[in-house]
Amino acid sequence: MSNPSNLKYTASHEWVKTEADGSVSIGITSHAQELLGDMVFVESPAVGRKLKAGEECAVVESVKAAADVYAPIAGEVVAANSDLDSAPEKINEDPYAAWMFKMKPDNIADLDDLMDAAAYQVHVDSEAH
Amino acid sequence: MGAKMVDFGGWDMPVNYGSQIDEHHQVRNDCGMFDVCHMRVVDAKGDGVRAFLRYLLANNADKITLPGKALYSAMLRPEGGVIDDLIIYFMTEQWFRIVVNAGTADKDIAWMKQQAAQHAPQLTITSRDDLAMVAIQGPNARAKVWQVLPQTKAATEGLVNFQAADCGEYFVARTGYTGEDGFEVMLPKGKVEEFWYALNKAGVKPIGLGARDTLRLEAGMNLYGQDMDESINPLEAGMAWTVDLKSERDFIGKAALLANLPMRKLVGLVLLDRGVLRGHQHVHTAHGEGEITSGSFSPTLEKSIALARVPKDVQIGDTVQVAIRDKMLAAKVVKYPFARNGKGLI
Image 1 (cartoon, chains in turn blue, brown):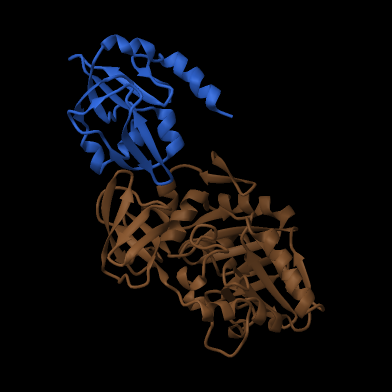
Image 2 (image 1 turned 45 degrees about the horizontal axis):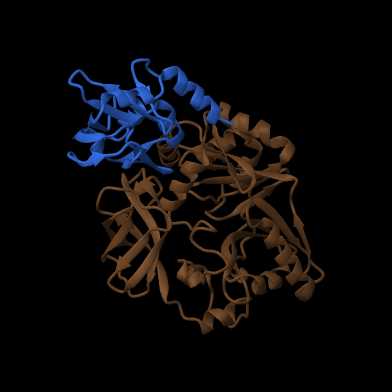
């Protein structure tokens, strides 16, 4: 699956989407869900939690492995997607629609430090062996 | 075939071809095939082979008298730890076939040869590196094998569970590692590719190591290296049913087992809270600490399940706490297997 060009990406395989209200929603990339396989558990961060960039804040577990999800930028958690609690497979079915949590960024300009779709693809290719 | 490959004890093995959960259900509800060429076939031949195995193994080779009948057993260190778990097939009084795990095959064979040199030097122990193995498992598995290998049908349709027939180039055993009916077929390496693609053409889907692990876990079958190893007493690994301590027969490890009463036991866990049980997580019980040896998500039960080694006084029905990351989650102690023959048992 190609990575949408309107999103930003991290080296740890999160995607970040800027919403109309200035918040950002965060999920894991198609590449990440493909590596992990069938998702069976998602734990999102608590609403109100303040996160530093790069902080471990959520967990996804597939049948075969658990993986940490990191805050792509600093900010406060303003929403968690509780739909994923009962249907974690949505991450496999449509990874770029299955957002895990939303943050209000401390500084929206921090997004500029993240990768665009093309740079992320180069990163994915460089990790492949 | 679109497989995701992983290194497994030096073998390049497929983890999953598509969805691991779909592959799991495929085996429980229909059938699937596993490339198990990494498993090692060993032939023990010569006069007195049964007497040798009676001494070598914790289970009693005398239990199998029907030709082709198989027996699951532990092979123990003199100190009582498990060198490997294996299956022996009684073919004739001069020939038993043994199937051992991949990762332990070399040390197993060295141990068997060393013991044979001491106790039965007339025997030959041969690693059958010329053979490959494919497991076809599921309620429709046998019919698919007969469709592809019609010449084996007459000799194999009367096989009871845990029995094999030697059909010339094809050695067909009604055994497996999934809790479903099916066959494990051993055949010359040069024939395996053709066999694999013929099965696939007949509609048998390939199943990866990932689903193999959830199937065996649901079926309550141990995985060597995870649920037991050379440091573990088999009586603390759910293997008491395979260890024959009642007869007067002596076997390697028996004295150690009699001298060391088990203080722990293997139980099943079903997670009551949301999350996934995994190997090495700590288990807190009213009788002390335990540890998960194998844990995953059960596609049949749609819950997380595990095998755990806990203090012996823990009882079926108890609730225990499992440490997962920064939380303590509740799990119920259950009798396993969790699922077999297409159905959940919990």
